[in-house]
Structures are given as structure tokens and as C-alpha cells.
Length: 491
View 1 (cartoon, helix red, strand yellow):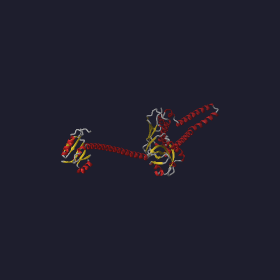
View 2 (view 1 turned 135 degrees about the vertical axis):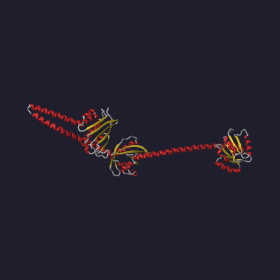
View 3 (view 1 turned 90 degrees about the horizontal axis):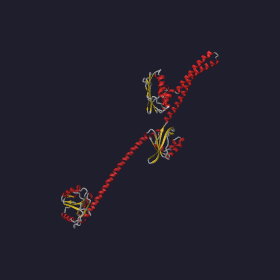
View 4 (view 1 turned 45 degrees about the vertical axis):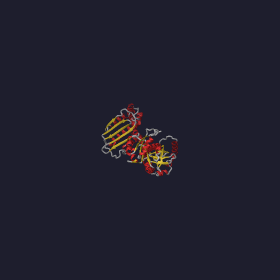
């Protein structure tokens, strides 16, 4: 039984219906609290004052039609009261906004059916509202999911575009294969390097592009990748597909997921230039060693040889002489020659491995060089390394570079001044060398000057330690080189 607190509004054009309904509503068992009016105007007023659970109304009223009340019904359920001859208009209203209808009969039996019709209409209204709410929530959810999926799709497109850009623009060659070494994808760098297309690679066995000597190693590597084991960088030789030229590559392989399948990403770096530089560096080291041996032999021959020959001659004379006074004189001369030999050997030994550098470090050795060459020109020296010691190889390389640079300036530059600045700022040891000599023509700052100036040795020494350098020179404006080495002090 519904509570009589639920208000029902009746809008009736027939006064007889109103009286009959009022009589029916007096029954204490009647389930609703009724409000009865006979015009659209009265109904509008009540609808503004009260919230009605349902509204029952004739379609045609004295001052209008029920459709005029549509903006005022709010959430109230609407039931049309109709006569049999007006059923078509009622059905039209049902299609547009009414919830139900009830046909009057001449015996007023419909009044008995009113509570059932009202209850059914309210329930249908409630179900429709719930359905509308569900539809609204579903549509909202669909919109949200659509927005999320759209955002995800856009992010996916952006990520794919970024991946493709990085994939195609990296300086390393990239190739993706399956675990049977069948081609899947390659980047533009690799394709351009070999002058081929993806279709070309896909139609051939990629293993055939490797030198046969590496086939066994590669298959072992693939087995390790299948087991999830890590692999290290390795050097291999690739046979160019079109030219059949053998090209050295450093490569590494990484297992990845690509297009929803297990795959292998191979990163390939052409090391032709690195191999060339390494070979040139090795050749330069060998040449430098040979030149150093030749210089030592020449110094021994030119400096020590004559002294030893003279010593041999004096020794022979000393042995053959019977004159005590002459022997004393020969012995004295022999002593002078021996001291000269010792001094000469010390000088040669010091040039090979400077004792000041070995015992006191780079800063002291630099000062020793300055003292040695200051007789020929003025050398300005700055340093912040004080008593810092560096690895022996670093100190030796910097020492010999500075000595070679000063030799070049003395021999070729016609300079009056040399400026040397040696500094350390963790983790870099820097050396700036400059002179005010005649300079020379140099279009490329990284160009190595002529062979006769000994620059190949200098550059090779810098590169041997992984250092970098810049050279500035022009006719009439002197010469400058700035050297950077990454190192750390000892202790």
C-alpha cells in the first residue's frame, strides 16, 4: 500500500469526472493524496508549488492541451485520460512524452483502475529513468574509454614516430631479425651504407653476409640469446652485399619484442676508420721507436764513439810507454775522457728517460725544459699542478709533446716568445702551447701540419691516450695548440 503522502495531480475537463474521483478518493484505503483541477492554468500553478508523483490529465482541456504542460512536468509521470474516439491523439502523445494512458468507460469503471495504472506508470517511469541513467553512465563511460583509447593511440603513434626517427637517424646500423636469423627490419643508416633495400635483405640469408670464419661464433651467440644469457660486444667482418667488400664492424645483440614476436636487435658500428687510425697509430709508434733507436745509435756513435776511440788510443799509449811522467800525463787525459763519456751517456740516458720527470714529476720536468731552452728564446710558463703526480705514461707523453713543440718552434717558427700553460681541473689535464712565430696556412683546425714539423708524432701521442686537441695557426699570427687528456692524479 502506497503512502498517501505521494501526491497525484488530476486535470479533468469533465466536472462529473471530478465529482466521481473526489468521492472515490474519500475512501480511507485510497493510496494517494489527490489534487484535482480543471484547467491548464490551475495545473501550472500547482506544479510550481508541489512535486507530484504522477499527473493524470485529459488530452483536451478548456484552456489548452496537455502538451502545453510538458515544460512543467519535471520528473512527474504522465498518464493520459482519453475517450475511445480520441485514442489516436493519445497514442501520439504517448510517442512524444506521455508515460501511459487510460481509456474512460461510460460506467466509470476506469476510476477503479486508476491506482493500478498510476502504480504501473510510476514504476515504468522509474525503470525508464534508471535505464536513462544507465544509458547516460554507459555513454559517459564509452566517451571516457574512447578518449583514453584515442589518447593511447595518439601516444602510441607518437612513440612509434619517435622510435622510427631514432631508429632511422642513429649513426649506427640497426637490423632486427628473428632467432633463426631471418630479416625483419633494418634502419636507413644500414641500408644506405650497403646501398640495398629491405626487400633485398628479406630475400636473402643474412648469415651469408658474414665472413665464414664468424659463422660458428654467431650461432653460439644466438643460442646464448635464446637462453636469455647476456652477450658482449664483438668485432666481426661483414661482406658488403653488392660490392663483396669486407668491412670491419663492432656489434652487439639484444633480445627484444617486435610486432608481438621475439626478435633480436643487432647494433652495428662501422669501425673501418677506427681500425685505420689504430693501424696508423701502431705504424707511428713503430716508426717513432725506430727513429728513437736511430737517434740513440747516432748519439752513441757521434758523441760516445770518438771519446771511446780516443780512450782506446790513450790506453794503448799508456800500456806501451815506459816513461813515468808520460804515463801520468796519459792517465790524466784518460780520466778526462772517461768523465766526458760518463757525461755523454748520462745525457743520452736522461733524454731517453728524464730523471727529473721520473723522480720529481711533470711540473719539475717542465721547468727543466724551460731552463734548457731559455737560452734561445723567452719561455713564459704557468702551471697549477704543483707537485701533483700523474700516471707515468701521461707524464711522459705530455713531457715529450712539449719538448717536441719547443723543438718545432726553435727550428721553424722564428719566434721570440713561447707561452705554456699546464693545468688540472678534475678530470682533465690540459696543456695550452702558443708561440708568436711566423705561423703557417691551416684551413682545417683538425688538420695535421706537414711531416717535417713532427706533428704526426704529437697527434699520435695525444690519440694514444684518448685525448683531444685543437690547433690554431695562420701566416704571421703564430701557432697554438690546446690539448685535453682525461686522467686522475696518483695517490
